[in-house]
Image (tube, rainbow, N blue to C red; front, side, top):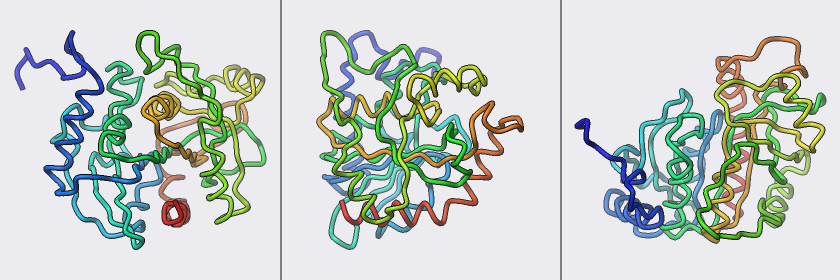
Length: 277
């Protein structure tokens, strides 16, 4: 790659929707599947779900698709898969997530979601590993996202684009998940910019303004998914209690360890939910 390379979303005249349409065309060409019904972004700890959802029809490196980059974070696969469920639905699995803290801009953060919509997906399932504020929660526990608070000071919407975020995380889809596991708890996700973990004071602020989960992804993606007309389901894996809630220091190794331990259980849950969508 030359020094003069310009990412397709960074070009002065770039249209994010057109770039997503080109990415969707790449996926259709590389996978041989011209349409997907459901898209799933697999965050830390959720990777094994792809193997349980159905038959993998095709798997491609995300870097071969227009606008996608190699994930900067350990725990993300960097692959895109097309899966056929037993019920005959096509599921697009996105293992390549660009985080806002990588500094590439919000367009690249939400490119995967816009691409999923361009493949025809009407449902967007967003998963992540995150910190829990409720003391009753424990590492390895999956939690439904009922709403979010965006503290990134940014938005994927450009210009005078006004999008209603009422019921952003679909109550219908959460009902499907709760029918499978009535013990699932729900909470409000708070997206910080990162990449540093939150201070105890920031966690208390999040709690005061109504948050229950803290992390560094998902909210911006959910907004873009709503703009694209998708129905959204969100899951957080509580990988640790947030700063000041637990006494020990936070680390990414802790996040990965909790994800690995919980992966079989939460992946099976996610596969069951997707089978009902």
